[in-house]
Structure formats: C-alpha cells, structure tokens
Image 1 (cartoon, rainbow, N blue to C red):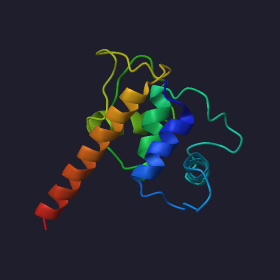
Image 2: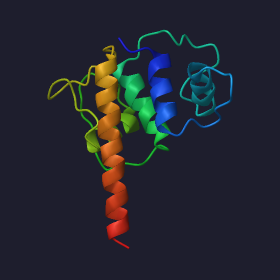
Image 3: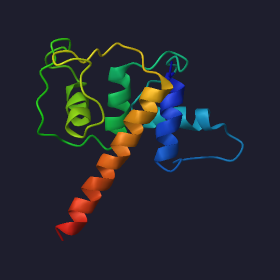
Image 4: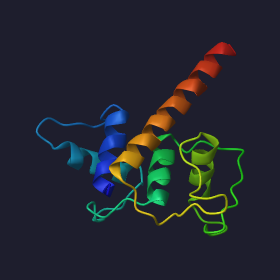
Amino acid sequence: PCSVSNILTFLWRANGKPGAEEGVADRDSAAKWGIEKRMITEGQDLSAPCTRIMAVSFMWIAAEEPETETEVSFTDLTEGADYLPAVAWAVENGVTNGTSDTTFSPDNTCTRGQIVTFLYRAANAASASAEQAEASK
C-alpha cells in the first residue's frame, strides 16, 4: 500500500521539490509542503494508507484546484462533500474513473502502482492542456 508520506513525496518531487533544504529528508520536506498546501494537518499520521479520495484530493490541490465542468454521480460519495471537485477533476482529466459505473470507492487504499499511474495520467493531462493553450495563441 501507498502511504500518505509516499504520495506527498511523489507529488512534492513532481512539483520541483519546493522548499527543499540540504540535509532534510525528502519525506520531511514533502510533509512540510503538504501542510503549507493544506493537503494534510500538522501531526497527521504520515504512515497511514493513502485512500483514493486522499490521492485525488492531494493531486487536485497540487494542480492549484482547477475548476471542472464534469459532474460526478457516484453513489458512494457524499453529496456536497469538499472532495467532489477533486473527484470531478480526476475523472475529467482521465486520472482515474470509478471502480464501477456507479462507485468511486473513496476509502479503498491505493497501491504505489496505482498512485504512479494516477500521477502519470495527471502529468499527461497537464501536458495536453499546455499544448492546447499554446496552440490557441
């Protein structure tokens, strides 16, 4: 399973290691960054397993919380929940879909392989958006 520390470190590195300090472990710098970005709170258990809802929320926040046009209708998500824009962003950008046509499985623990796949898809979506923006100039 992927831990909260793992995904934060992956995201922090993918974002150019902001605030990196010599002699400070990447996981510690990533946790500090996660707190600054309000992904996690001070004292949160970083060894806890990362769930699907955490993964898409962290990634959406790292992407600067972009707005989406997609509406999600998974039956296992709470109506009006703070995480719904993150799920919509993940679906709209092909980062991940539901685990079925009607469920997202927000509390399922992610493996490191799933997280790497999510990150790869998010990077490709960001690259495609940048290319579209450049082409429209």
